[in-house]
Length: 105
Figure 1: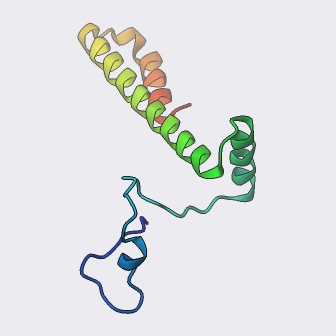
Figure 2 (figure 1 turned 120 degrees about the vertical axis):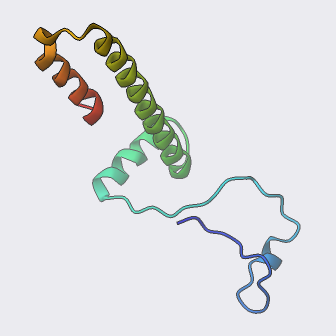
């Protein structure tokens, strides 16, 4: 869940006064829970790239999302090409290819 500032909040607990005068970076902050094994992998990635854990997590999420988008584009381009040819003898092979693209295997 992103941390946010409620506009118009006043009194105790107001974060508005704490942030007064600070420039906004335009990014949201999130808290994530990682399994110990995953946290160790991210820590190794961060050390290898000489970055903080937060920057490593952000980079890994970006790479994952870009990979997902690439698989989606590849899926639809293959689907379009194969629908045009409609070779029924390759049906099982095509199903396996599309299944791999969808599931990422």
